[in-house]
Amino acid sequence: MDLVHLRSEWAPSVTRELLAGTVVALALIPEAIAFSIIAGVDPKVGLYASFCIAVVSAFAGGRPAMISAATGAMALVMTTLVKEHGVGYLFAATILTGIFQIVASLLKLGDLMRFVSRSVVTGFVNALAILIFMAQMPELIGMGTTVYVMTAIGLGIIYGLPYLTKAVPSPLITIILLTAASMYFGFGVRTVGDMGALPSELPWFALPQVPFTLATLKIILPYALTLTMVGLLESLMTAAIVDEMTDTTSDKNRECAGQGLSNITAGFFGGMAGCAMIGQSVINVSSGARGRLSTLWAGAFLLFLIVVLGPYVAQIPMAALVAVMIMVSINTFQWRSIKTLVTHPRSSSIVMLGTVIVVVWTHDLAKGVLLGVILSGLFFAHKVTQFFGMTSTRDEQTAVRTYRVSGQIFFATAEAFHSAFDFREEDLKGVLIDLTASHFWDITSINALDRVVLKFRHHEIPVEIVGINEATATMIEKLAMHDKPGAVLSSGH
Image 1 (cartoon, one colour):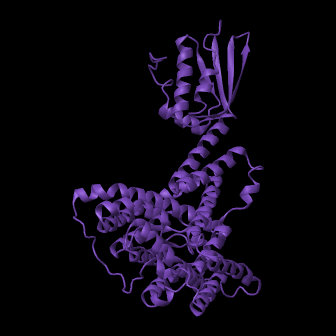
Image 2 (cartoon, one colour; image 1 turned 90 degrees about the horizontal axis):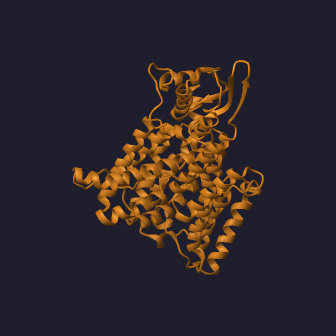
Image 3 (cartoon, helix red, strand yellow; image 1 turned 135 degrees about the vertical axis):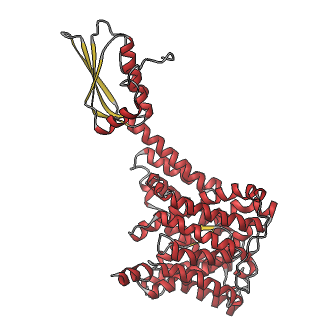
């Protein structure tokens, strides 16, 4: 049974895993170089990082078949640090980022993904699809007819070949054929080699060349915290997307730890901090990968490509990789979400569109997702308040008024709960508050109940509370004041 589980987790199909990982490795090279340029470091920093992160996350990560490497979102955070303090501080910040991510795993922060609504995930996916497509435009616009034709042919192969055979991933065939044609006919188009020099040596272990002082910690701490948040956010969101694509589950807390170990390794081997990549993960899964072997092979083969086959890899035309990434953006975008804009609740559509707009406008995934989560919380709170209600009846013989409370009492409905009582009703001899159909959630709601009871007592009207459920009774016992000896209404009320 253990061997069966190991096989299913690592390589349900060895051939598909290796072929998918090969496509990913080829597509990783130009992106790693581009992200290195964004961060202001040598291309080898991004390439070494992609190798280290992919290999380590294959073993330590919580999501099989997901690809982690150097990313643009992380690179943007590093720019100022590298410019002002140098690459040594970047390596130190990368290691500290990894440590923070392991701490996040121990604190079970991966469980917070359940608070991210479906609308936020859809907005996140659509925004990334748009950003991936936009990132290809500099390699297309103004590059000439040859590039347009090669890209079109590449897309034709990618989408047409599966109708003939699915034995080999169509993106891999696209890259091979277009590279062969470019080399044979000498098209003179932009290639991977034009983006930056590929390293010819293996990465080696080394401590960051920085003073190990408190001053250094003060410099790298803000960047490490930001990298930790961005890295975990993008990784956990990508894991959720791969979960859905493969109809499987993953261990989000293990993924936090896996990202941490990956970044610590990258920092010690001359790499920059990274995280999960939705584009490469989509390529991997779309190519048939389902296990960890594809991730391991993508990292290992990437290093083999740049160190051993560097001269050949440098000849890969960017048009071929642009075709692959356009396919990724098309496949990533949730096209059904356009139709559901008019059928889903308006609040869900606003959350989705808000997430898309902020991510695309700022190129900051964290800001977009944060806005989406806040909007989801606000809409949910508003929705819950609609279910709060209160009715009252008066027994004229006993002059006792019964208030029947229904719904959820928390910070958003606490004031409405308090305002629903009439504290100056004439000739009132008693009050009965029936909580059978209600639930109290937080200290604000308990405080509102205190104010109600104590205010009636202030007017010398006795109060009886009935129908308290067990959870609410526990909160009242711990937090309430009206049932404690000597409780009186505060002077502020």
